[in-house]
Image (tube, rainbow, N blue to C red; front, side, top):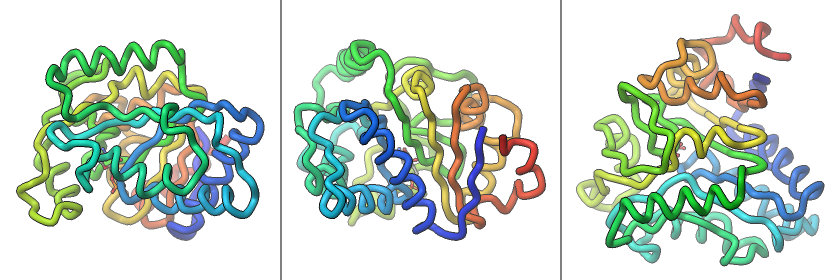
Length: 250
Ligand code: GLP
């Protein structure tokens, strides 16, 4: 595990965007696993700038998103499909047919979960998987539980996640209580896993994920078992693990 401690969110975003851009330049048809949330916003902005100003070409790139709320159509402003369009896809030259987000309106959600896994299986793996982390250690919508869930599944959101994400909804009660989420196998079957985090609200989740026991109670802790992980976090998010850093900085 390589940990980069950066001064602030902007540095985190630029460093992350540079890694993604390097990959896309080397492998124009790269498959990127992408998250939503406030943490990746700066990264998406920086990649869009590189597209405009540095000819970074996304025309052959494929993307697979981590999750989607159940019950929100792709046109709903808070759906993750809509988020991705507004924050990233509309600002680059990606082919919409190469972008994948679970369908939160699927009549048969279990069938939608299987379809998503089969789609992932056809790709084999992602070249890079970017993830944020919830304050309770959730990644995608894999919530703390008694066991890890490997497959794409319906996740019942915890109070912690509802509290953390309600701020995006005009009426907080409109936030769905369930979501379709990639499972841990989908997330872990990537060549390069990048965890980004900023702010002290993530300090406990980052410390537990990088240095705590590997446990489904902290889903992010599973990243310790991945052979190629990069953590990019600001100082505030690293406050609970500063003196252990040198052990992991290979
Ligand atoms: C949601 C997403 C996660 C994301 C998390 C953190 O719950 N499902 O993929 O990591 O939010 O969000 P933020 O970056 O806004 O803190």
